[in-house]
Image 1 (cartoon, protein in one colour):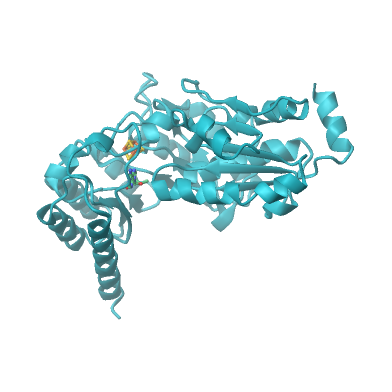
Image 2: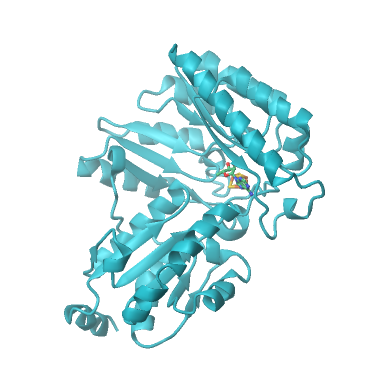
Length: 392
Ligand code: 5AD
Ligand code: SF4
């Protein structure tokens, strides 16, 4: 099989690939994996889709706007594919993992050749082979896959001299607004020894100044391993590796941020003091409806503890405005939380209904105009806070 494929490549039919990535760091890192697979097959990378023989869209579906962006760009390739029918167009990542979405994508864009998901992208070479051998509309989605194999080489982008390392895949939290647990499956932790080996390899390369440990909720790392592993120990062990580098991590769920972890960050050299701690809302009523499993007071308490132990901590956050049932009073609670914490950075989003989530069915959806007004208010307030902070 491999021989046929390499002959195909050798004959110059497929020379270049282009990966278009949407969404979070997890997706950015998974594109590095895809890129590694395609390079190993002998293709070279181009940044222009209309120069490529294989175009891969690595998609996101966290909000409707992310899906629309990807769909717009896939649709724009219709003419290119018509002129170049041998070009292979693949769509992967979170978007097609939604129930029924792959079929909808094929119906809307019949020129898509391959659809794959978040849990089987390491099989991309096989999907490509099948397509080249004539199979049409390959749809390969996996919902209960164990961890991906360890032996896949990444083509690390190295932007900002940073290397990403997955520590967990999936999420068990089921925040009521969020599609992630449905499209990325249950939380699976990698073995600590595998993570450490990957970090050693990265440091051996010599070109990275930071390693960012990635998970939907890094604080629950190890819960499924039952071997005594936890995030605090993992961080310490990564930081103890030889070399001049900083260990970063994201994302921390406030409900699982332990005192042990704060102590570890405070006392271990090489661990970054940038803590991304999504609050999502400042209203306990809304936090409960979101199934975040902490209150406003608990969140503020954690911030206080962090600041007491880590004087130069940079705390950043994500928040959602216009969650169903969010009143002016609830929103004002978010505004007052922002004023109290003084985040170093805020990623503010308008709530976006996601099919299949619990919040989709909730009453009291907030009108778009109100969401827009609230998100602008948050962004303006944050600008003001940063201005005062910098003293200009
Ligand atoms: N609507 C708006 N924002 C969302 N997020 C997750 N799901 C939604 C949604 N349905 C935001 C959260 C999360 C960030 C990655 O995206 O703030 O922390
Ligand atoms: Fe989504 Fe909540 Fe899991 Fe984060 S912790 S990925 S917001 S379900």
